[in-house]
Length: 404
Ligand code: SF4
Image (tube, rainbow, N blue to C red; front, side, top):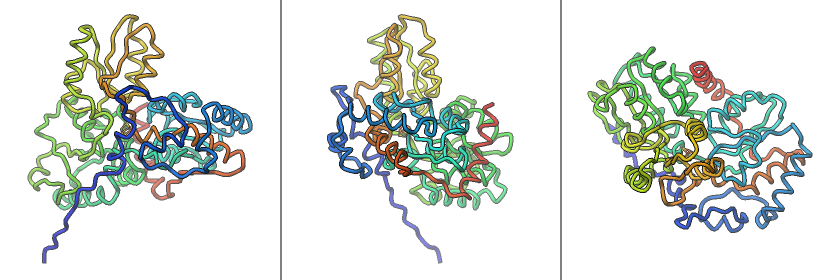
């Protein structure tokens, strides 16, 4: 008897909440937590005394807590964090740099990760067992990471095995922006983790070991990387986790060299070729630089494409007077503009739309977890189970090896 399984499309709640902080008036000033709660997204519950604290009260509270904790705590801040959080960071960077930083910080007993959930998981995998990794607000997920859960990916892996056989030579590559469980699946199955800085090296590594790549969870980074390596789009298919066999025929799977998971970043897919045309009309000398999580068309229309670190280095090194239209998260673009006053730096998207999950790290949450540490409490510890950690570590170590 054939069983029919119906798979209903479920849009992650983080994706539905993405536009909550978008502002057409460009005003992204930090307000009290009580005010920001009105944005209508999920926030983690926090003791009420933190809701009404002014920026000055939070500032002095954080300074006091940090003084008491000394080098027992280190704060890591992702480039997409708001200014009122990044100012507290001991180190700032993209997810790759921060994961290396987490592995290098030996003395701190607590790592407070001002980023999103998958980054804190990675820090937990790479740091030592005596260290605790803390995510200030547990509601800070990532809509892209939420587009691939481990059950869906295990189903996909089994389905691919049933078409291609046990030795189907599919090498799984997962972008850093995925859960620890998916990284572990890659570790167990001869796969690797990559970031937007080293995705091409991960593809090369994979093709030295197999015939096909399953790329998770961002179809755009996967497609843009494969195209850059000369793989035509006709050799790629998109796996839709809500359809039987990903919505593909066995023949399509057998012919494919790249199987792209149907996920995307709700921040970077906002950038369009129309915005690039508008920028070129306004500034004929503009250089357009975008992140590879943007769509293929946007990437093709840009002058430069690269990771957040690449974007930062390129704009910082550009000559005075140059003009930059940037396609990445608004907090990072605003900071680039502030730090390069001799250049014109602007975001391609006229609507100010921060990453709504990163934005949930409000400074009051940072104060809450730091005061917890002072009182001997570890609030919001991110702990990856030992087995998952060991397998994920294999895939992460492979990435660190190809990145040396
Ligand atoms: S910018 Fe996109 S990929 Fe990065 S954390 Fe936000 S939703 Fe996730």
